[in-house]
Length: 295
Image (cartoon, rainbow, N blue to C red; front, side, top):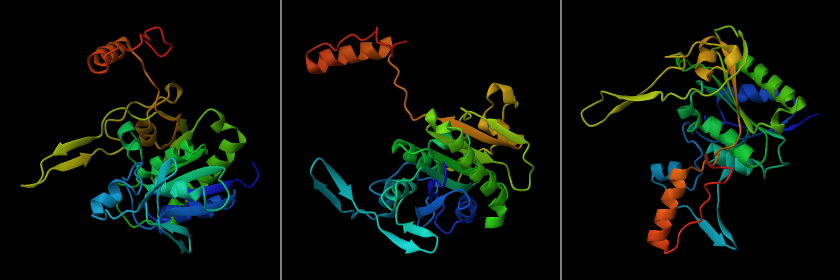
């Protein structure tokens, strides 16, 4: 695809070094429109401004406009040197970005400082959620992060230089090879900038839960997150390794996703529905045990 329209966002804010680095690299691939939060919104997941982030801030005076067959709410934005700065979440940015200019050909979210690996992280990451939101809107999407949480230093756009080059090449080649004809979005984790890249591996998210509660203060508890390489599986590039295992061996981890969720109908679920339907609805639910979704 020549000169694709690229919607670039993140969850770290419009001034983040990782975003600026991707903007520089992606400009060589297509036309980039930046629509990003005006502040750090890490961990926002798939929240919209109507929900969790503003509720936590205590600002509940959100105007909801009802009418027709739905409702709407306003998400403020301002013009910024880097693009559009949105007083909202990463998902707000993706939804709104589809109305700011031409409809994008691809959504890119990142580059996040800190790897988004593991099933439990992917499901709550603002970076990955923005890519998922793009996919739900029917737009091919890519989430990018870099393994830097252990360094905790001030990162510059130059630190994200290799990640920017990898991302630009991924966008160009993924569109060229028709990757998104069967894949909705990609989650990409890139090794620490001080480490070599051994290669690129197609991966799956580690299924183990990486959070635990440890001793905290008198009136608080502390939640500890595992590093990406803790308890990593042995790396086998021919057996679809986990994202953590690949990253621990300095491979770029590329996890392809289809949109959730796959419905699963079982005999136990059908039995439960029939019993509750009889008890609360006065009639038995139809028996779909022969349905193709049944096990």
